[in-house]
Image (cartoon, rainbow, N blue to C red; front, side, top):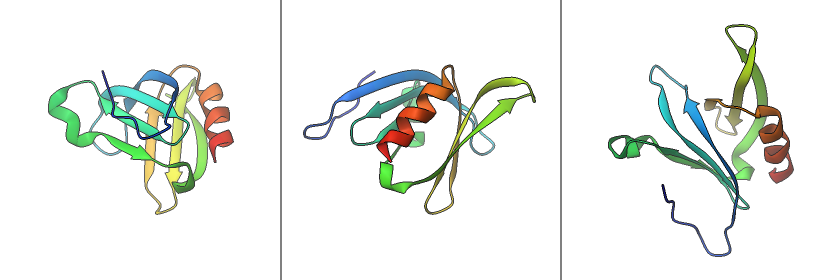
Length: 102
């Protein structure tokens, strides 16, 4: 899986995730660079579901539990009010890293 990096952009970390915003769920990779967060779907047919979020667009970072007790959820709320929800391992570390970007 490849993404096109911008000038002076470096990948910091990446993880497998399930993007669960809206009625559809999309498996993919959440990629953090020194300039943005990028979600890339695993299936090429889902490329239209890929998106990026710049640090300046992130208003809130929330943690939530799946089925009320599994600590795997990370929710990003953007400045325009959109909610992006992800299920992942190491959500606390991701939360810290994203907060540092902002």
